[in-house]
Length: 324
Image (cartoon, rainbow, N blue to C red; front, side, top):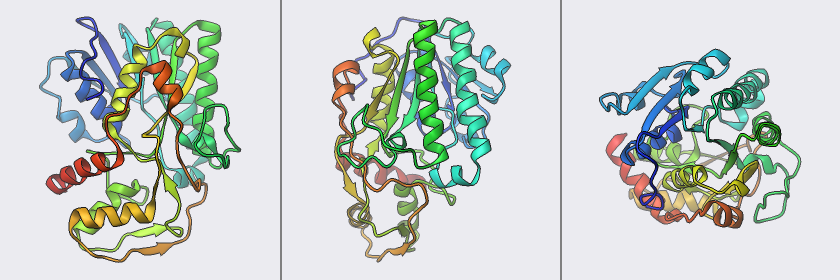
């Protein structure tokens, strides 16, 4: 794996916000395997108790049930912490269109609380989850940092605001911040249930049940699907990145693109089924095409993703077969 050789001093304490979620729980697991101490902060609004229970018997793991909208909670959770991996947020573009005030309070104000707690507690580095949605309606491919278009959803706006606040905290308070613009992450523990579930686990769940998934739009939209192991690597390498990387946000992806119709066919083949998909209307706020230029992350973070789409899909399908 791209991070297996990384080392942190004995006793290094990480705070993972949103640590009971899909990405957060995988980060907790990787850090514990590296011999680090992990404090998980999650209000379990979208995270799962089962993801906390995975590590409950590990003496190096601590769980705090708390809300990032509460500054006092953020302050207490950040005390004595070396690094913060801030994953706590509400996802889903269409849901953000329905709940703009909540997304502002949770994703923007909550992140600002965490930045302030990191500053006061003198955290070494604040690594946070941003999103490819910040590219908005920009049509150029591949997507490059500094060439963003107009934002298309409240969710995208929250992520763009987080990047701006992180830059301010680096500029004025010298808090080393690194943003990671995730491009369509998938893999083990990603929730396949609900109206806002990500496309790959939702497709797998329905196909395993013999049901036809709905593809929103014509299926010719493309995405830079990124396996969870690549995201873990990016987070850990961001913690060790030189100061030149601070105050910036980086594309975290495979650097390729897959069309949804091709993804669907790949999953059908991997699962041994032949079920024609259904088609529905495009989702409001969705971008049409996504393909990342990862050269900045390669240069400044040392990012070198091991998992291409094919390898990631094979592992994901294997996991869901055993766990659904």
